Length: 106
Image (cartoon, rainbow, N blue to C red; front, side, top):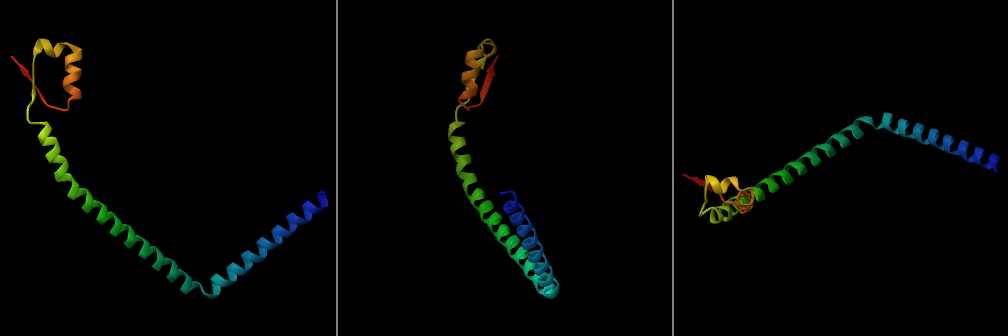
């Protein structure tokens, strides 16, 4: 069993060397074309990412005014609290959870 594993290990190493040699030979003969292809592919990928980013930004900017309108409807009436009410923690927490501004009365 050990002999078979040793032969398989040697075979994998020889195959790796042969594939590496063939790849190196291919790169040296077609190097300029291959580098141009890689750079062109990277350029196209960066263009696609730029277009996607622009579309996402446009979608975000279109949604933003609608969100502001929803928040303005909530903010119509601020919660008024006196200083004594403000000191009571539960009432203060309810005011904070309501997402409305609150005003301290004198």
